[in-house]
Image 1: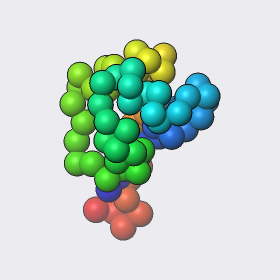
Image 2 (image 1 turned 90 degrees about the vertical axis):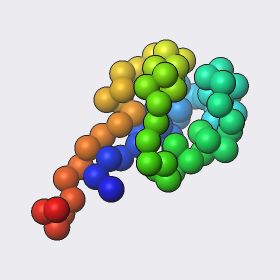
Image 3 (image 1 turned 90 degrees about the horizontal axis):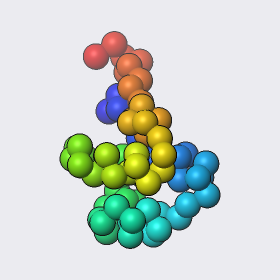
Image 4 (image 1 turned 30 degrees about the horizontal axis):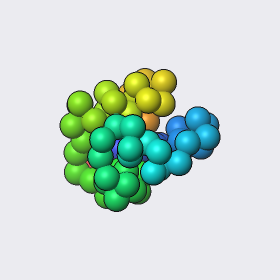
Length: 72
């Protein structure tokens, strides 16, 4: 998938654990883990908003588009 999720990078920059983020945004730690690994098909804007608020970042700091090398 050409959408890369850099949530783990932002957590490291903010020196925050996944557990702490999960508690502050109101989702399970397992769902944060799924987000970090990119194993989700979507994310609610409400959740993205809360993540950005807690991590003091922009959506573009978390989500990145990389074109596939095969040209698809």
